[in-house]
Image 1 (tube, rainbow, N blue to C red):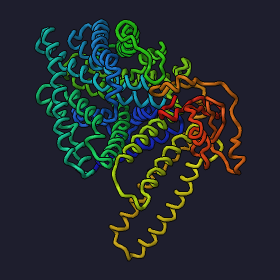
Image 2: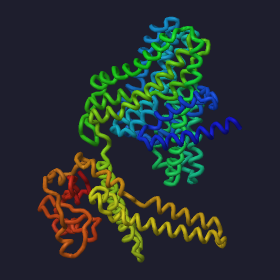
Image 3: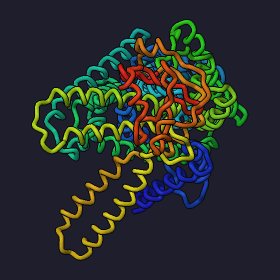
Length: 621
């Protein structure tokens, strides 16, 4: 009961901490670590010893898998050189660099144990880096590299750590270290691929979302345990299986299974991630208490801890700049078309927050190791120090270096373009299908496609203080669904209808409500980002023939005024300069102008917008 009560209170405290962090604008990982440290010194809080098996077997596989299935294999492949240089090269570089520092400051510690400490503090944490990076609004390329790095660097660190500990007790030759690392990595990849193939075959025959999601809960643990049993890297096996299954999920799973898996894993990852940071803080009291038995002076202990912290920060910065300019040499970004500036590299080097793997790995160091309590304190200092120093300063540095966050207007433009392309393919398929349509089903399908596309374009082309048609539809239909739900609940109270039928009808209303496109908040946010624009996707000959023109924003659609209707947003024909209303408007005069004249390209005539649309090729720039 005491353990159960503590776990419940821990979960409640974590949830409360996340809410408070959101309210005060502080990243949740930082607040939870600080709260955990403070709570560890309270007399009524039990002492928590985080065993390495709990982290490495219980927490690490699901956290890695949840990140892997939501990561983009395409983005990972595009940045694979940077990711491998960080997840393998930087980890080994940091291991040896920290090992030199520790051995110099504490000569009683053998070289093998000093390198083991280096391996412990070498890997940045996936959760900390991406959680803080997304909240700060770092460019997606940086977040992608950080995410990819921290998916694989744990494997490098853990293999190096185990080899160093084996060398401390038995003496291991250098070639053996390289062979162990090769076997662990290749074996982990093979096991991950085999797991993907087996699960893929099973998923082709599974249509029940509950069964499918239940299977996904087992995958990371099976991969990890099998790989470790075969002396391979469980981390690599879990990550490879997750990346492949996430990449192929649109083909292997039903839509319901994908939605259920996404929501369930997001919930699990949210709870585990934030609980991990609270647990890190709760270790503070007993780790510091153990220092009382150390034979080293307080000044020497403080020097070791601070020197280790400074080493991991400096070594990362020393690595990333030569790696970028000598080895990676990044080309232009696929979305922006611009080569990332040096500030991107600096932020990539600064975002090296450590987490629970560092603390758990530290406990793997044998208990009879000389000055073990000092080494554990150094690891804790690195975790807490990087989270607080780098985590707190990252937003300030991003602002000072003028690093642009992802532009929601670019996202809205890309979303509208993708939906338009999808609708084009759908219409072509509709025209190929042979059917007897006496009820006008095809017209209804076309109308729904248009409504979906109009809602996407309205995120770009309506005035921020005016309600768009999609937003009006959302508001009215939401109120109608609320009325329907109230009536169904009244009927439920009467007891005259079977509960299964009531539940089915309520679920259908929930599905419809979740599908309503409320773009008002996002559309208002995009107004602040209207000054930057890059090409989205490919550009056709018509878009190249009609470049952006600099004109004053249009104020009226004359055709709408003549007909007595109201427009939503305005578009300008780039061949003749005609200004007309968009397709979300009742009369769709811009599209009518194209059908009448065959002038192919229009440009937004709204303030601060210069995107163009080709009617012929359905492409946006």
